[in-house]
Length: 580
Image (cartoon, rainbow, N blue to C red; front, side):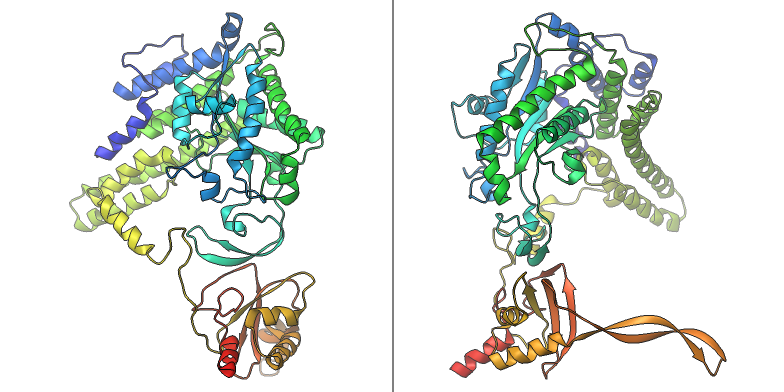
């Protein structure tokens, strides 16, 4: 069980010293929750409560007593151990070939200048990145999100921001550069090549807000940015119209008040050009700054836009309470204490109103998941103690089901370790796992690209054909197969006259049964080769026996032939032999 305890070290940074006491009076629900846990888990929970009370609950008092509102500025990607920008090594590259970090630095410096100019705002960052923000350096190294959260806590920050540029998914672009409709060679998550018919254009700004932020500050900030930018004429991305609640990769799981700016798509030719325009830059960054001040005023009733703190402070006790309870739920789940997490959620449900409904529902789904997995685990434990051998052997099934209830979110890692220990009795040999993974990936190069060579094809091996807008079918077939002209003409004729067989249910009169019955019949429908991607099968006489339009197809030389992408056309090989 060592790994379970090692995982807790990740949380220890929240508690610099044991024996910490509550700094402020708490309601009965918080006291009851703390009584559910003890030792280190309790100490860390107290630290979380104190941090939130001191930072969020006392914001107005802090600002009016010469205090500052601290923002931690995290670096976007950066250089890896090889000294290369991760924008280059992970295909986060613009059409011009510039990495994401190039744009991030420009925009970050502009926002930093605005933040620094406000006497009530303190900007914290890693020393090397602070130099970048101040224009003293143009290079910085990569920092993990978990380290950003750790540093933000140490800086006693109110929130975390990061300045990013967007681009089309690594798995949906040609060589990391193209963001235009059409047929492109792309890769799947394991690095294998495939052809894909990309039909959409990805463009527009978006702001990722942290779904773990139960106070609603992050979401309100993202919505304010979206509304203001759209009013100024900026285009919002189609994904949730530019304000996206994100928990996919557990960004800042331990620091929920956080946003990631995505200012535009550097993989879009027109948008990348706009992203370099000073007017576009200034409008984007000034809006991010102005909406930060607006969100503070909206939620806290505090105006810090001038020389003095103004406004009428709002009662934010419920929002602070929600933030504390949400953070405690995550903390207890990470510690493996499902009972304390459940009790925290019960307290959260008492703060039920239209503004909090969305956040409470989100955490309700999390609690439902861990309780379901824990229930299965307990059933497995009971069966493992049964004298009946068959029932004991069934225990493992419950342990597996308990583990499989939880996804890959790091929040569940301690629980998954517990269930895995119950399944295997002891930890798997991690070196053996790594070795098997290496063996499994041995057929790929260092970049994850399939290292296959051209494979001779038979005439009947299905061929892949891509037909672009404005391209003739004859030209597409010639590109796909590199065949003699008479063969191309024969195939084009076959393809133009191909009829797709379809099985349909029809009603017919049965003389034997003397009534109408339903039966299946094959019908032939016209098939049109419109722009797109196709897999076509031939018989030995070059008759088309099947044609299918597909959105994507793996470039597997053992399954398909294509001279343009695979260099393995049967017809090209035949032509070459004739020349010889």
